[in-house]
Image 1 (cartoon, rainbow, N blue to C red):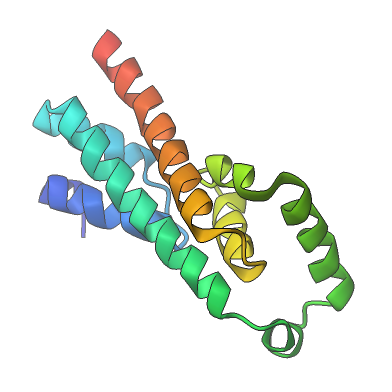
Image 2 (cartoon, rainbow, N blue to C red):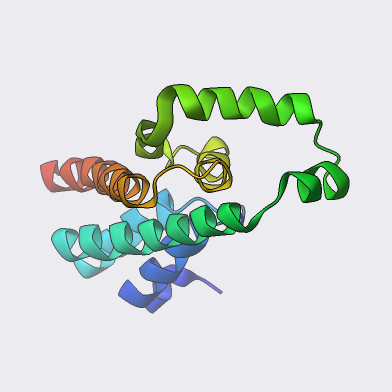
Length: 144
C-alpha cells in the first residue's frame, strides 16, 4: 500500500512506523504528502508528531528491556552494552536530537530508554530533533 495515497493519515502512520524498529524511511513520504496536500506547515506538525510518537514508543520499549534478555536472546555481549552505556552516560539526552538519523536513530531511542535516560528531557529532545528534521524539508519545499 502506498501510504502517500492516504494523505495526512498516511504521513502520520509512515512517520510513526519509521521511528520504531520497522525499517522504513519517511523522508520521501513526507515530501510526497507535502507536495500533494500543499500544506507544508500541517505536514510539519503531523510528520513531527507521528515520528516523535514512534520514537517515544521505541524509548519506552527500551525501558522495558533487561540486560539479561539482550545477552541471552540477541547474544549481545556485556562489554558491548557497557560501551554503549558509556556513550549514553557521556552525551545523555542530547543524543535524542539525532534520533532521526537512519539506522542509528532507532538504536539511540531504544538505548536512551534501556539506560534509563530521564524521560522528560529525552522526550523533549526527541521532539525538537523531529521538528528540526522535518523543518529542513519544509524549508526546502517552500523555497520552490
